[in-house]
Image 1 (cartoon, rainbow, N blue to C red):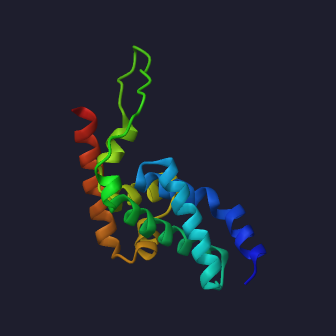
Image 2: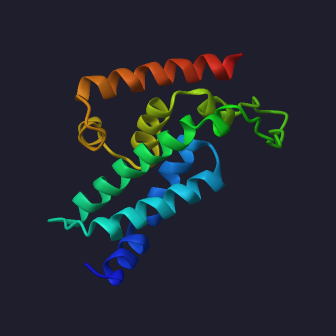
Length: 153
């Protein structure tokens, strides 16, 4: 495997990796670190894949795992985020979805992200995260219920 393979993978799947990492870590700088680490790992392992879809699934799986590790580091657990809330127009409710997402556990946030933003099925998500499909469905159900509670607080 050469650098051109990794560059092509970054071009084709880099956005997805960065978005998954950002959804799990809740921080763009941390997501960028995860992004770099994922593609460095791909280059270092010299891993080969049968299909591009297998490569993408592997990249997302590695990104989720690395992002969860970053999220669990003591430095990241004990810091406050500074977010500007831009008010919604008066005729709409002001839901702070990013703040509600940030309150979810990383695994639940990853499931919601992969389902709603990336368009994966529960079966595909289960394969990526090495879980049973029923576990993924349970995590999604729990996460949606928590999101509803967080948004209505």
